[in-house]
Length: 320
Image (cartoon, rainbow, N blue to C red; front, side):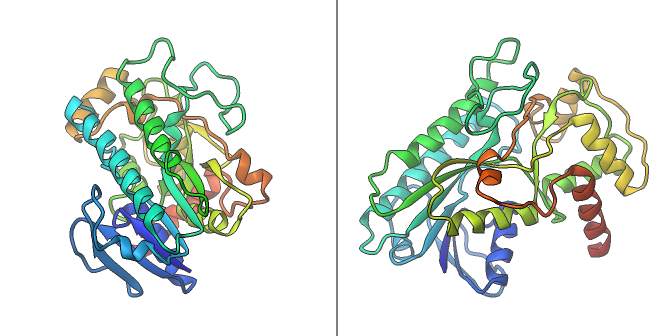
């Protein structure tokens, strides 16, 4: 296949690029600044907002996987939240325009979304799947600005749905934290905390964390590209969401039984501020499971966090 990946230069894009190239697919990455990527990957410049010469790559492509959008790893100021909204919605709309104007449109468009679209799961007794999950925004006892994160996700998915594309199947991939051994990844940050002895429970640690091993993320994307019967929202998350304290305990054990100092809610806020991040990423309970993937017969290579953490830590040690 020829696969075009807008916004494909980040950590998640790297996981996907490598998997596609390894299977012999042609990969074209769209981003704002030219850079050298893996052998077999071409780079084309775009601005993420307006049609240009880059749209010629979409015409005749087999698939588009849009990962574009400002990173969520930042302080959730009003300015940054607006940038997250604008970068996601505008890039999705212009991808839709490129697909609509193509003489030979791609047969499938996978659009990145987020598991954050679901309500905080602190008071739920079951996990969110696509059929019974509760979209967030109206939860009691959570900070008001958390609702804006949900609003971003809803507008993100709506921007894909509004395009008139009779010949292109659309999937919104509601993605959990993608765990890979790469530098700068979520796992890299968590291991840094574990090595310093700071990777303990945050605010009690009962809030759930949804995650997916990088290998399974790439395999699930390929599965969705090939399955013509799947469209609409699909959760990309392992079937084993775990409480935050268990996630970090398992990671510390895999690294070598490091101590893990706990943190209160205000300490988490202070630490997130120092790291130019936001405590919402640590405090919101994300308990999401892959109902549609499992129903469609997808088999996870790393279904449990115990096994995934051991595999990922072994890869980090081997690489470094």
